[in-house]
Amino acid sequence: MSSFSGLQTDCEALLSSFQGTDNVRFEVFSGLWRDRRFHTIFHGQMRPLEKKKFTEKALDLAWRYFLPPYNFQIRVGALYLLYGLYNTQLCQPKQKIRIALKEWFEVERFQQDLINAQHYDAAYIFRKLRLDKAFHFTAMPRLLTFRTKKKIRETECKEEFKELSNRVSRLITNDVLEEIVNVHDHYQKMKCLISTDQSQPDKALSLIKDEFVINIKNMILEYQQWQQDKMKLSSNAKESEETTDKKDGGTSQDSEGSERANALAKIKYKSYNAVAQASRSRRHRPVKLESSESGSDQGRMENRKCKRGRERSQLTRKRNSLETKGVVKAIKKEAVTRNPRMPVITEEENSSEEDPPRPKRKRTR
Image (tube, rainbow, N blue to C red; front, side, top):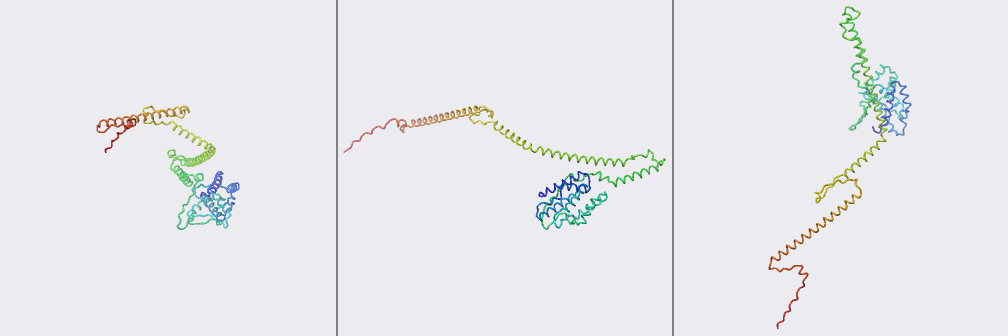
């Protein structure tokens, strides 16, 4: 359906404009057809196979609007659209309109409604299509093949084209109203026969108002008018929202850019205002917040302080190491003096004093 989305929008635009006229005459539809130059829909550069598929899809799409749950005026417009598409197609032989057996009952009932409402132009066009053998009667609405699983995407029904679900009008039809009128008249006659003055019923017997049926008709008409006004208001509100969205489309990009810049600024502010963790040797000192508002001089002073602290820590470490070495040497000296068997020889004496000369031995003869 995605490749024929433009075809659907064009058909819906034509039907919506026909619905806005509040008329079902063929002259009105033919004027809209000529104004939009709808006959040029088949004049694109297409191959024969593509032209055949496009024609089949166009006829199938128009046929969907001819069936319920669409209202009467849309169905009449769909009938006129089928007539125009069938006679202006360029395929030879002409592609026919596919009708399933379960749909034929609705078609016959709609044809009878056209004759009863004296819309003879629409009834003539339907009969002309039947005489031209424009319908292809099938068992199923879609073409099925053996051992193939294909998901059939149904066309989405447009809410504006649907028939209003009026349960009140379904409950109280014209036949029901006529029956109520007959019963009411018979009731009035019986009351006159029972009463003393047979020309008019007694006041004791007047339990129902005389304008009972007329009030029911007025209430039904008021309800239908209210429902139509409500639908018009909702459609106008949707159109106004679409226009405002189009106007605000250019400014939405600027607003998105400003929102992104604000978000980045908040992230930077949080990162620079984070609490700096102190080292173990400085945990007794109070922790200060590092803010990005401080200047470059404050940063240099802090760097100098850090360097001085590092130098001091290195000096203290050297002193501690020298002190530990001196203690180790003193312990060694004490251990040597306690042992009398071993001579006491220190490294400092060996380095300072020189070895004494050895006495010469006399030779014995």
